[in-house]
Length: 213
Ligand SMILES: N[C@@H](CCC(=O)N[C@@H](CS)C(=O)NCC(=O)O)C(=O)O
Image 1 (tube, rainbow, N blue to C red):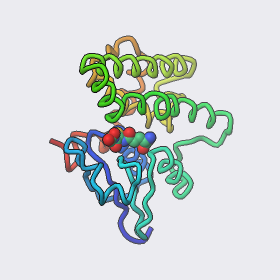
Image 2: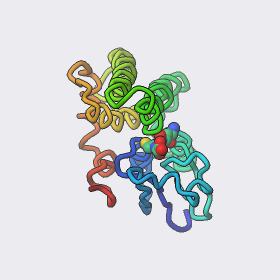
Image 3: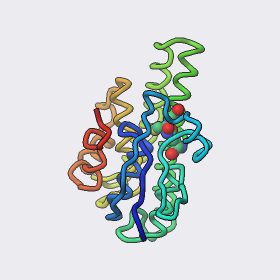
Image 4: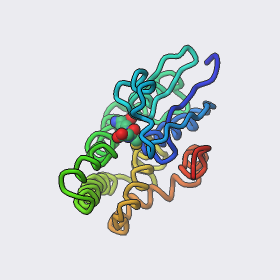
């Protein structure tokens, strides 16, 4: 790649965290550009003009192309830098790994993201918003726990990490933030512990990002 990759993100964004893991995994260096979600910077006209969804993450390629949606970015990374891979060759296994990734990316995280919780809070109050988030996360993690329990550990699908692990690890930050009791998810905790020492995962953690508090 000719020139720097730029990741528009935010240290606490779970979706940006996924992309950071993916970039590290592929050995790609990148510049971090922070969009402060606390101040609502994602809604600024200049950013909205670039990303009409007014969200992070977005990966800016050296020619200025802006890629959005963390899963689309991860799939693009896998296609353009195939090794080391985060999806195995077997189509059946790939489908099962993608299914677990989508439990988080499609059916859990979007239902408890900032915009949704603000709306629930406006309609029903802060306690209801917290309950909403907690219940959504418990549902998603329960499905992942049951799916992962059918597989050998320590990762979600056996002895090597995959796309599924990339999605699960950042979701646990939100789980803790909303007070979800993770002791009910031993397989998920095993996955987190197995990923923690891997440099691609360790360097993607929120607290080591340049825009961390
Ligand atoms: N499906 C999107 C989700 C992106 C998303 O929810 N981003 C959050 C941060 S984790 C965001 O920008 N929230 C700002 C808002 O809701 O206003 C993806 O996977 O990239």
